[in-house]
Amino acid sequence: MSDVLLLALVQGITEFLPISSSGHLAIGGRLLAVELPGVLVQAALHLGTAVSVLIVFRREVWALVRALLPGGSADGRRTLLWLAVATVPIAVLGFTLGSRIEALYSSLTAVGTSLLATGILLTLSDFAARRSTGTVTEPRGWRAVVGVAQAAALLPGLSRSGATIASARLLGVDGMAAARFSFLLSLPAVLGAAGAKLWTGLGDPSTGVGAHAAGSLALGAVVACVVGIAALKMLLAVVARSRLGVFGGYCLALGASVIAWELLA
Image (cartoon, rainbow, N blue to C red; front, side):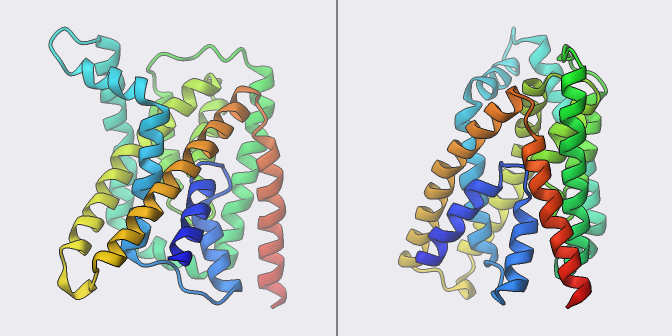
């Protein structure tokens, strides 16, 4: 159970802070010679952090639900349409190149390069934020760009939150509007993929998931959710102050170190 709790803490922190949870898992797995967590554990922890998004953005989620009802908001329905459109790139890329992308997790050079890309994006977005009035908040083409950025973040080391928010900021979008759309956009993919894996795994007798293991998964999901709420609120505060460059510097340093270590090993 202690392993699950440790992974839950890591998941809760790195899922939302723009430092790439996938990159840190790949680096930790190689350097510490440990295996990545099983599918069921990953699914449970991802569901936990997805609930974090539902809690923090509960008003926005409820507004979207009401938009589907008779007399619902037209703006809400447009946002739902943009969410559907922006989800297409990650669905297509994951379906067509999923196995090739997964193979990159074994390459620290690829991970380090993606971390450098994350660092550059975050740093540039700070410069753009300080030069922009940040008034673009209506549904426009920038949301499709955010969808492409989310798909690109399937690469290990490229932060999903960092790539999506930074790409929108580079286009002059208000930081909080970009963050809201980014995290709402994460829900369909995460809830769909993690929910399906968890349902299939728990229903498969070959996984040998007993009451004790199920309890550990549930506790891990709760811990990931609680930690995720704190990390998400911290990120929103950073975005509001246009300080993503702080995480950009960290990603640049880590990416360069990983590539240097791989080349000299």
